[in-house]
Length: 250
Image (cartoon, rainbow, N blue to C red):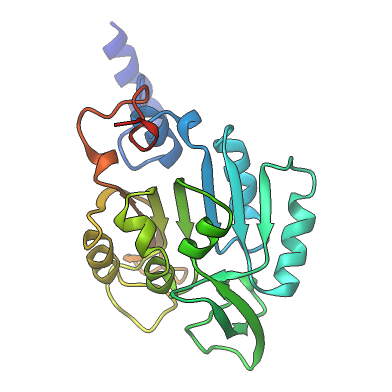
């Protein structure tokens, strides 16, 4: 009877009803909670924070986490501060970019701050910014483990990964959520094949693909998406929300 009623509603409303769990890949936070327990995530790196969209989301979605939001552009960083000022001290703002080595670089500034890019020269307006690395930041802040890293850096993702090589080799990063495109183009994205090769070299495996975005112009193929990779430890079959691998003493 329940199945009959469910099928009737689905047919009538033109929707699909999931009673117990969403299919893998629909909602990242649902999948994290199902497989690992959302409260086990205690440190989040938000690389490419822009004006705070992801910081606000992570503050809500990761209720036990300390969130570090990295944004290098001065005007964008000021907006990030304003948009997160009412959040608790769980959100910590850092006015720098992440890359393969520490130093300074020029970034191209656009009218839409979401597409500011170190790598792609699409603007005549530039700004010198500070570059740090994930490895050096973790060392300087005495952060042993980062549970979740988001990287959205308009084509600069591989450089950010390179600057995290020590943490990745030691599996001190649990999960990475990285913007990517299906194949290599001249747009401001990192090709999935290059990204997967880089992550596989550290033993990280594909957990899922999220937030598939079609072309803005209406073309019927995918412009970009966000693959999520997990460490070898987190991909093991016996890992459960009650035995979160990165904080279990061997």
